Image 1: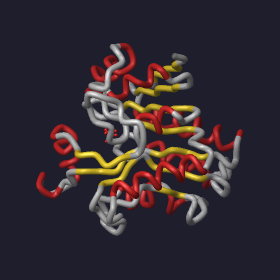
Image 2 (image 1 turned 180 degrees about the vertical axis):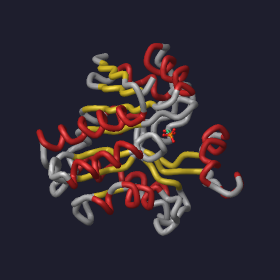
Image 3 (image 1 turned 45 degrees about the horizontal axis):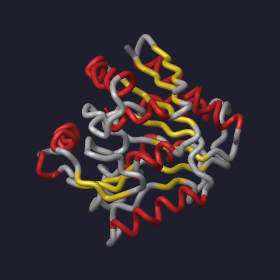
Length: 237
Ligand code: PGA
């Protein structure tokens, strides 16, 4: 494993450095395929990217994006959809082409067919150049939950109780939290040429240590990143 661990003072510094790495990727390859993530952690990074765009420092005109995951059974118009999240937090504020941003379709009638099609689209685009990741409290990346195997490709997954609990902060009641999702597989993520893993808050320190320095096991899905040869981790602790 070649891992570059950047420790920063605080969340603002983490966000700035992450945005600079993404901007650098776009400067060195304007037609980059970026893999994006949702969740609280990358929000500051997206704000910084918008700022860099407004300053004229970065141009998204030739960029293509693929998001890690989307809730299943949640339409794009739902403000809790990841589609809505990405548009609100990033896409609506930068010059990315309509049609250049991709997420799995959470309204697809057939989740298996949608997963296969999503995986094929990423391959046809030449694969992801730089994949942004957060990590769940249980070690998940995307919605690859702790399991007895590493799922290879994009698939339909039932969310664990721990993930449903974590996501319930965005809903009036736990019952409303989606119970399943479409997610890139571990193989999809590992095929990205570069990985940028963002970890904020000391509550994630223990899972970070397990993932990056513990045994590689599907019970801690992020631990597979130890086998990737270009991982940058940015922490704010
Ligand atoms: P968070 O989620 O950024 O909201 O903590 C991370 C994740 O579950 O991947």
